[in-house]
Length: 422
Image (cartoon, rainbow, N blue to C red; front, side, top):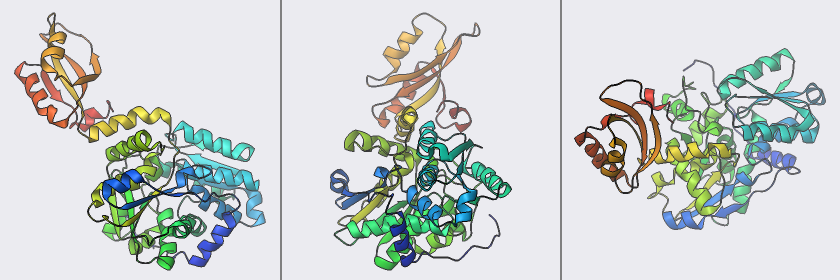
């Protein structure tokens, strides 16, 4: 926690409408599509606001362009700086190239390569990318120092009036496109810029809509701030959902979200991963982890949204294909279908065959096996990963291992060891 004074600001409809006019030359009006599959599943009218189809494959271009276009001639000549985990960087890069403004973009070292490459592509000769730190907050601190040192204008990813108003144009489009009153609006929250802009638009034009903010379970910075009643900085976060994982939300965005959101909820990273796979396999929709947050949370509202008109914002599709294996792994772990063990193999011929034939169930599959004999002990340990067909198969598997003296340890519930496997 900290004791800083929170700013008081609320995005006005006129300013959001002005932002819509400013960005109209570069921003696509993305579709508001009904999801037949999810509508049937929940007995509701589920609409997806497809910001993953935006020009830079996320809504972030809206705020970035609105901010940079608002700068004075002197500020534009001096150049701009930003920090981003990826999507804001691409929006800033596009705006810099389009407006011919020099930009320096700081990104965490762990940012997926695909997002780094896209940022360089959109910015071209007008943008320099600097990799700094392990989190957005690390990159942000470095960017602020650089900005002050060279007297450039900082383009914040969420805590800026022009950014918030630019993101609020998503709300204007939704309300123009929807033929029915919207009962629920689910919005992903990282720093809170999009949610704050939507609050401005919907409070003016659709005040009865319930706006639900959705954060990753491993990075509950907005929820923590709302629950404690003050802007709260988290000491540690899970960075997996990089587009929505920040240690501290904005001084501008926190009070807006605190006052206007109907509810603030969390979704487990594994549930998000399963949603990503479902969207790809069943709907041919490619989303990044942050883009799946609003759909992943619908199970928690299944009864509440029956018969309602529901909008889920699909915020972006900048996903790196090299992350697919990790996404599948996290989804299986969340579903209780992937398990890691230390298995103690007797040092005798046929022990491995016995394990495969006698211990594993007919639908069990070994997906990880790490073994090395380093002594002449009676038993030698191996780390074994097993994928199950049903979570109900776990206890019988463990019992068979124990009965035949193969069981060494179960690693899924030992985070200090488990982190080295996943």
